[in-house]
Image (tube, rainbow over all chains, first blue to last red):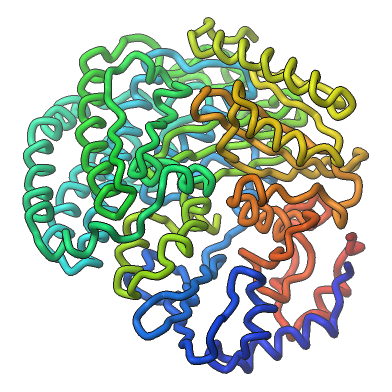
Length: 427
Length: 186
């Protein structure tokens, strides 16, 4: 293939002049492949999004409708594509970290964790116990933060306005906690290869303890607003059903998989960052509908609180970064009196550290499912290839299957229930 | 640098790695080009024509049951030959083990056979690989632009695709961009 001038131009013109409704069946088929075959000429095509409040970001859905029933559906993504994987190849391992925050912007610390664990695996090092426990506490708080946004917006889509306001009130508290330790509310970049950026501040523990005290009652409040709400139940029970077999075949992970009755959680199956020390349950529901996914995530929030409490009770003392000066910068205090420290500092911030040749895959259980990071090093200070297995991206592929035969209004409920973040889908 | 202490899961991983290798080598003696172990992960380097039957075997064997296709990742090893490789990360939820199949690809236009009949999610993952790395999976007829505009030229994750220092592609500036390109490869 060459950078053809004429073919690109003609393609652009036809794309510009047509609107979706004017396309014929053949054209649509050519455009969307076998995923979008129109069976009846009477059907209506609806372009939902990219500017639509219930698509949770810039997602466009091309929906074929028979009256109010969804016959076919094709997701159109890429509006937020920023080439994060390509960009990371041009940065050193440390600097590439900041790109990971921006993928799943509702769970930046989970992204940090996946990437940092991948780099550590490639280097063959392990973070000190204190750093691992800090990571567990913060990623579980991130899970709560992410689930709160999911719950609020999901309920808002189903016309329960007040839940949204309560969820964001609690989320605000969590963002303050993140700011307390990392200096940033959202784009934290707090986990670093070899540990965490700096130790937890003194006020962190009391703040989290306070959160642990009041939050269980808040979960009960949200549930009281929704569990006994006939409108919410009517719109979620029996909607968007996925069987356990389908869920696995379609690569669903996280709450979507567990809502279909498959008990699989990477924190239990392949423990990382010391998750094997903590006691918690993996909630599952068997119905596989929107309501089951709601139940699973609500229970996950309670389990996260258990993990945080255990990690906080047993938070080990000691260093929060590995000692290897080739990987982590020396503390500021050493720079004034040690020439070695100055050299290490200079080398790290100009060249970075080199990782050996080889490729690895590290997966973590992010709030949305399995977040995996494939990393290939080539002996240089920059990654040769970074790839993220984004759970939202994979989960979105099941949307057409879930929505087929449902009402278009229920489509909104289904999108909310699979909990997508477009920043992560498009990367 | 030393690996961390052996955890129960590491022993389990070692046992399952051994089992997988034995089973696959017994069933397909010709297909495994190499076995690569790194940081406790097992990779089977698989000859391209045998990929699908190995996948089928891994999924259907009672002792393995790789029922989840986690991810398909393409890699560009320019200037090595074969230049491309496609990694399949498979996971067995019932047996709790993971394996990576790595397929060297000589010609991206004639990539590996699609595994969509085994795991439906493969269609979606292969489309991503085609969009960004330009590897055409045989038998997947729905390869299209997923992230990039439909009229985009080239595949940005390839190593010979420049990062920055050039204008963004639009319909009106093709000639200007093309004149400045080092030498468009494909």
